Image 1 (cartoon, one colour):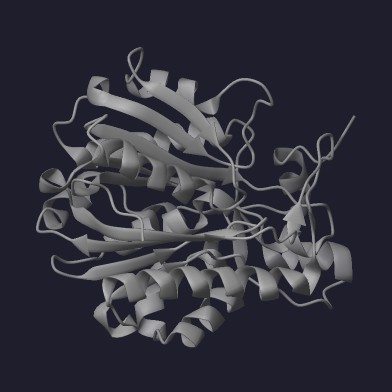
Image 2 (cartoon, rainbow, N blue to C red; image 1 turned 180 degrees about the vertical axis):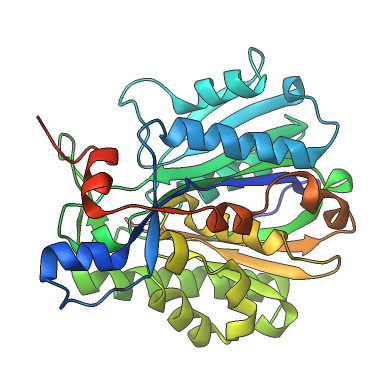
Length: 349
């Protein structure tokens, strides 16, 4: 188990989800003449003026709004995890840090580990703050996920992000009790340089990839903390589709009621590095003091991070300081497949 020397928690959190929605029936209509079925209802699509930078900035501003009196100049790290950074060479994190007023005396960096890039940065920030090197660190998980036209991933590859300001436990709305990581070299999903779209291993992405890593990380952390699924009010898993998190939840002994508040995939798709972290924002929006939350991410390649959180009394007053995740989900504008192709830049001229 990974645990910092001094207690660390979430001081502020925020989400951002683009307003545009592509119904899965539109993908099905174009590629299977309506005969293929739909794994989710719809997904969020970034607008023509949105990318990982803009999504990260909006989420970060919401996290700072919930952090209260914390001045951005006190943030000593701004880390952005994504697999769709807009620049191949130029950091996303410096733009975000500049936009929120954290520059110039801060550490900035971009993180990559497929869909767990955000929780990877979260764990590093735990160590950064927990060691005393920084009082506050900001982490973001965001993506504008891409998929090859007609591929199964095109139904679910969504857009969105979540940001967390980590700081001293005494200022936190949720204290981190511990974390556990489990990684192996499992090539279930990849994209080589100069390739426009990722490739995946089909059914191989479930077992031995997703299920093996999430189960191992979750069980490892609960064993180290001497906890059972019944000790948690909520659980959040990475959500590549609707079926996988429901299946792994049952395998681990969690109920559908524990899983439900953080299940967003059916409404916004798989937001990759933002997936599990966005689910956590939806849970924090409704959580109450004294409740526990288990977060387990998954990133292809492959690995999982499990994080246990204890909600504090500060949560109640801070929940309403910024738009809730469900507010962003509710403000939807439906688009057709042609508009989606234009917004996602799939037409190469």
